Amino acid sequence: MYRLLLIAQPSDVADPALLRTQGYDPVQFVPDVAAAVECIGQKTYDAVGVFTDKDFEHLSDQLKAKQNHTPAFVFSRDPETQAAILKDVRHLLHRLHVDYIDEQYSLEELSAIVQYEMVHNLLSGKANDAEKLYRWFDMLRSDIPLNLPCRVYSLGMPQGDLYLTDHWHHGQQRLQKALERNFFSHIDHVAYCAVSFISPVEARLLLVPGAAEDCDSLTDALDNSVLHTVNEIKSYLDLDIDVYQAGTAACIADIAMNNTKED
Image (cartoon, rainbow, N blue to C red; front, side, top):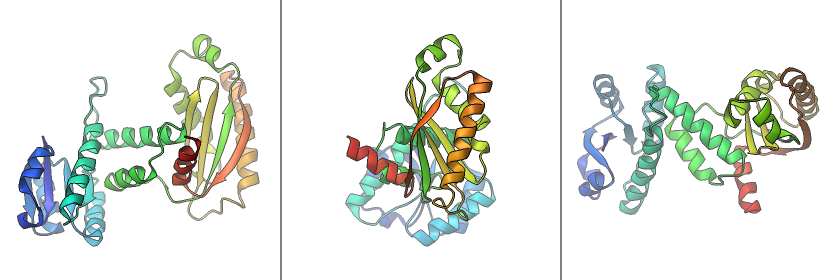
């Protein structure tokens, strides 16, 4: 069962029994954001619900200032919508609290893991639910720039399966993290990057320039930097890798829509 804090009156919940059947117990009600922040400072809650966008923004600012990563969500007074929201929040909490190989992670680290998985599933074509991505990232108060134009590259690795077997013994996920953190994240003007393997011989690279940058005007510079970085990867990791396709997406959600078309 998950501990839930609601900035609401008990009468705002159409069916009080629904809270327990959806996996929330105990549930505490408070009158405003200030009271919620005080409660969070005293006890641990799995999620906090509010009824207005204004309260959500205020609460998010307060939690961020305190470096508190408790998920927060906007609730609804519509009975049917209430059930759907509670179910969605429960699914996110399941992901946050799943057993990660008995490792001890902080809530901040667990949040980063969930965000990493969602972006990479989206990028690799394993997920196409952009609305879910936005909902969950809002609840986690993600800093990933979901709404900015981005550049997407297809990377070919003809000997990728052999490379993973003979040269790289840390697994595919460790390799994509190494490509992200040690190489592509150092490209100028890039606020966020991700690399996701579609297969042992193909990967996708996502580059999101900062909000102050114009993705279209940076296209040539980004493309040249990617080619330069690919050559560095060949040299440092002895990995046969090349760029064979590139394009611009209106935002990360646009990738999800393309995944839907491909399905």
